[in-house]
Structures are given as C-alpha cells and as structure tokens.
Image 1 (cartoon, rainbow, N blue to C red):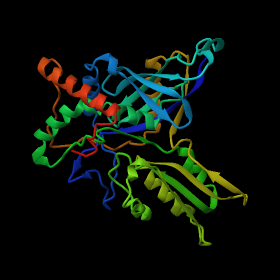
Image 2 (image 1 turned 90 degrees about the horizontal axis):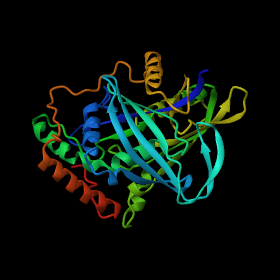
Image 3 (image 1 turned 90 degrees about the vertical axis):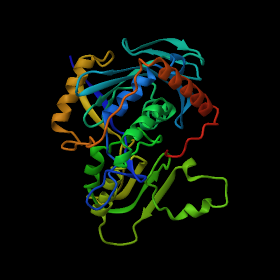
Image 4 (image 1 turned 180 degrees about the horizontal axis):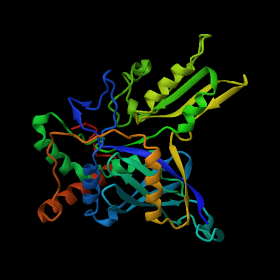
Length: 370
C-alpha cells in the first residue's frame, strides 16, 4: 500500500557573468539569476570522485542543532538524459540518544555521544532546468544552507575547469567566477502566496538577507555603521522589517516584493503580519522558504529510485516552475577535464588538498570573484 512522502525542492544555478554582472536579465534590467548548465555540475562531481575518499566528508554547523553534523559525499550518477542523482550521507554526533530503526520503526538501542546513525539522502537533479528534489533526512541536516556549504567547501575541485573555460571563452566576455560557481536557491512555498491572498491588509513584513557569496547586495542604509571597524557585512545576516504607516491596503504590493525576492538566493526568513478576511491578526510565513512536493511511494523507508523519478516526472508535467525557460548559453565553447591525464590529475589533487586544508584552518582566502 502506497504511503505519503514529502520531498523538498530547490534550484541549483551555475552563474556566468559579463563585467561582474549576471547575464540573465529581464526587459527592465532586473537580475534574474537563474542561469543553469548541467555541464558544470557534471565536471564538479567527476573531479570530486578522483579526490581521495578521506576528503569526502565535511562538518557543517547548524544553529538549531547542538551536535556535530557531518555530510559525506557517496556518489553522483547521470541517471539518464533528464536526471542526475547525487547521494549524500549525514551523521550527527554529540549526545546519547536512542537508535531508531527507520525500516522497522523501532527504538531498541542507545547511541553513545561519539556514535551516529548514518542517513542516506538522495538528491535528484533535473538536467535541463536544475531543479533539485531532496529525499527525507532524518538527521535534519540537509537543507539549502548545508548544500551550499557542501559546494563551497569543495569549490577547489573545479578551479582547473573554470580556468580552462574562461580561457577558451575569453572573446565572448563571459566568465565563471570561483565563488559562487555553483549556487543553490530556495523555491518559495506555493502556499505562502496563497495565504497572502487571504489578507485584506498588511501591518508589517520582514525578510532576512545573507550577503555571503552574493553579487546583488542591496542598498541597506546602515551599511556605513561598519566603517572604521574590523567587521564585514558578509559575516552577518541582516533583517529588514517594514511597518505600514498608510491606511490603504498594500497586500498586492507586498506580494510583488516577495515575488521579486523569490528570484534571489540570499533572502529567507520571510514574515508577513496582517489582517485576514475575518478581521483577525494573522502571520504568514513560508515553511523554511522551501517548496515541498507530496507524493505516494510504495516503500518510504527504502526508496526505489526508479519509482521516485517517475513521481518527479509526473510532478513536472503539471508543476514545473521553470517550464519554458531555456538556460543554456549559445555561442560558447565547452570544455572538460581529462581525468585520464595522470599529470593533470596529480596537480588537481595536490592543489585541492592544499587549498582544502588551508581553508579548514581558516587561512585560505579566495573571496575574490576571479
């Protein structure tokens, strides 16, 4: 008997730039930031696979989890022309707790603070549009932030590819920058905008901006407070709250603001407080600013990949947020790293090890976009 199962949906982008500006713009000049080419993703994981396995796991920090969290790269597979599958494993260490058998749904052992129950997470990537469908993580580690951390920690694997790509496409004026060469975005929950439509007015609204790795920094008025200090804006998240001073309804205008934010990858913690149709005060928030899809699977504890992809294909037929958009560049020359070239492979591994270890020690500085 089929059971209900929820998968979270993100989008992954591979930005290309001209003169430090994202090339994707609408007719009003607004940065769309939704450019995507699967070749960059393929190269990233092709090279990561040749890196020694001792480097295939990273620690990540989450504000809502006190324990040590770890993500391990397991595999990346081009499933067919339409889908790729990324397999990650998560672990949590740091406290004594019961061990849950997710298959038998039982708790019959205890876990020491230095032990963990690994959780396998599958991320299905649509090769045309860059949508990411993420299976359940019972360790609660995988999300937009930690996936971005994963790509950022391993960004050194594609430095050689970026160098080659920029060289052969120099005449076009296009460039790939090291940060971010790969960026994961949230997709707003469809319920969020539906709930906004139920308001008759807005009292206040807010959003938070994370400037890390962003190229579209907003003009926040308080930026000058950082002058003459050792602090940098990229070290903080910034929250903007707006309180309504006018009596006229502004629901539609506020909705437009969040529709604009939905195109950007550095805004989260959305919040709208207003009056609903019953004249009661209500608060509307998207669930982690993440779009979720609900499907039926025959076995939700041991996911069948073929069945999962069939369900995702069914979803895309009726609900593809990027339907009709083609993100591939034209008039460019693609390149690839030859992993059969032993000298090149040795250079890539040595460079990666040095940069990865320096980065873990806090001494690697490649914040420039070169």
